[in-house]
Amino acid sequence: MSDNREVTLRFLAEPGDQNFGGKVHGGAVMRWIDLAAYACSAGWSGKYCITAYVGGIRFMKPILVGSLVEVKASVIYTGRTSMHLSIDVNARDPKREDGHKTTHCIVIMVAVDEDGKPAEVPEWKPTTERDIYLRDYALRLAKMRTEINDEMSQTLAKLDGEA
Image 1 (cartoon, rainbow, N blue to C red):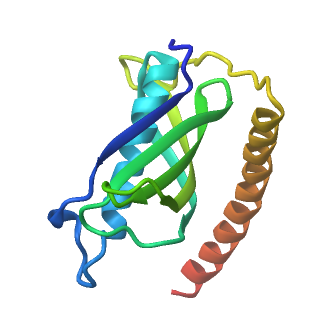
Image 2 (cartoon, rainbow, N blue to C red; image 1 turned 30 degrees about the horizontal axis):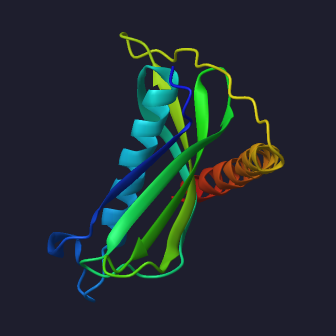
């Protein structure tokens, strides 16, 4: 396990990442988020990790092709086999200092062993006021996910019964 619970990927947004509107495609941003989440969770746990959940993704501002992009992943809560990560994507013109947040989401990664079964991860303990807030944020979102999953299950069961 690494003592560092954060990873930042930095690169230039390329023309191949462009959508029909000339900005970076949301799917490209989601791929970058998944890469950063894997690098962070694998580094924290020392194990191969799989994506279990991506939620609350907020696309706040577009990313222009040629922008310097930073994707920062941080462990904000650990379960027995899972790691909740806060992901922030920032972008800026590489010739300038001023950047802006473009995207935010939460990703849950699960560590797995050689047989693909969930494996225990080291516990992350918040120490600062900010870390405690982020841990509590992850726990509040987990509660909301349970409510959303229940609602979706009920709706899908009803709609499938009508088919």
